[in-house]
Amino acid sequence: MALTKIVDATVEPVTLDEAKAHCRVDSSDDDAYLTTLITVARTAAEDRTQRTLMTTTWRLLIDAFPDAIKLPMPRIAGVNSVQYVASDGTLATLDPSVYTVDTAAEPGWIVPAYDQEWPETREQINAVSVLYTAGYGTDSRLVPAPIRHWILLAVGEMYAERERSAEKPAVPHQFVDGLLDPYRILAV
Image (cartoon, rainbow, N blue to C red):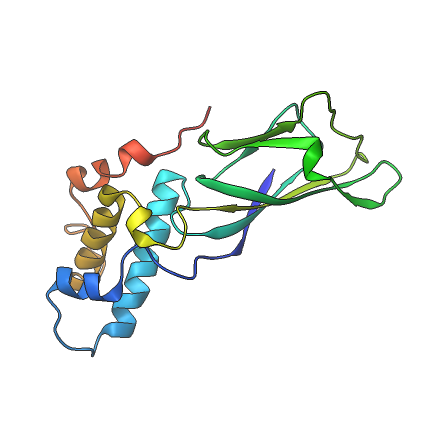
């Protein structure tokens, strides 16, 4: 199984103005730096929670159709396409009527629709490709407040402590990481 981010988020769950207010920054001298820190904090939060925060497109590659296809990095917004290498070596795209997408579960799942079966694939690596979109959307207010606050705390810590230190690691407090715990996707 291989998971690749195809299109990253175009908006962040925390705005530059929110980060500047949190860091008590009045000038625009560090706007570019703070913008980078917001992205770094978002990607760290996504990595720690194994969840997509803002609309992002992912590609999942698997060797064959399992009973159900698990879609990592929820919240699943929708499946763009399911393609596979047919047994004769041609690339085919499944009609969406052949499968059902569970966007309510986290992680999400794709299963054959009622009275349908997965087609045969050629025995090869990455024979099945699923392109899907995940995230809470493009409105940062839809991201849970504890995750947004964790991002602000991480930005503040990284802004104040620009050098790595064993004594003062970025976002060192246990309670801070605890804000993300309810949103972490655990392996099943």
